[in-house]
Image 1 (cartoon, helix red, strand yellow):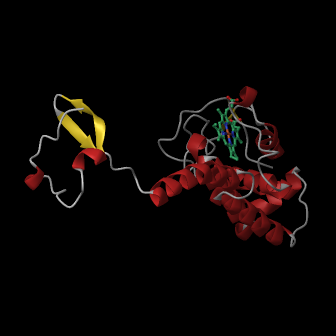
Image 2 (spheres, helix red, strand yellow):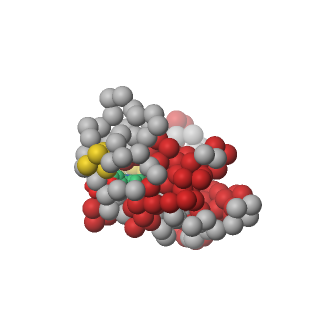
Image 3 (tube, helix red, strand yellow):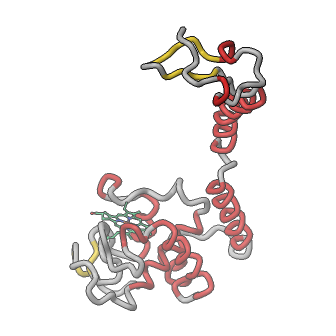
Amino acid sequence: MSESIYPESQSGLSDSPNPEEILTNHSYDGIQEYDNPLPGWWKFLFWVAIIFAPIYYIYVHSEGRSIYDQYENHMASVFELRFQEIGELEADRETILEYMNKPEWLSVGKVVYKANCVSCHGADGGGLVGPNLTDDYWKNVTNVEGIASVIEKGAANGAMPAWKNRLSHQNQIVLTAAYIASLRANPVSGGKAPEGKAIGPWQ
Ligand code: HEC
């Protein structure tokens, strides 16, 4: 170990009885280092943070506690409350056609559509990856109840996902089907080119 490179008068350590004692015992190209360990409280917090982080991460991201899960649960209970009024809807022709004429319930279908379907079918239903839902051409659907069935079971081996287990309530499928059926009244100009076969009006 070499001597301090600073004269004692400039080292700022003149109070210290022997500056050499607080130098670490290495020297790189004559550069020396004081031995200034981090304070105990700092190291303590460092370890506490390291131990705390994974516990907190696992806690917050486990089922039901993330802000997304909380949102989903709240939405599910909102739907549940609203659906008390109409009970469990059948996914049949009469029901879907009936709810096509109930704007206040169609809006529930619209909410489901906006939250889950826009990424593939476009905000207005004009089609993106998935087909245009506003024209007269349909690939998997020949009647209005067929819409509910495609939503429930999916199509093209999952290219169109099955929503049965993703939506919290059967009524969401029926009301979304009614909303989709209603889109044909306003075909999107410049939507995706027709796919499938032309079918007659819903009846
Ligand atoms: C990951 C992309 C994707 C999402 C998300 C998606 N779809 Fe689809 N959807 C598709 C594809 C692709 C098809 C066409 C399947 C085929 O080629 O037969 C399709 C087909 C359909 C059809 C039948 C159209 C026809 O011409 O036969 C309906 C109805 C439909 N989707 C409704 C919905 C609804 C409602 C939602 C939201 C709850 C939704 N889709 C979400 C990709 C998607």
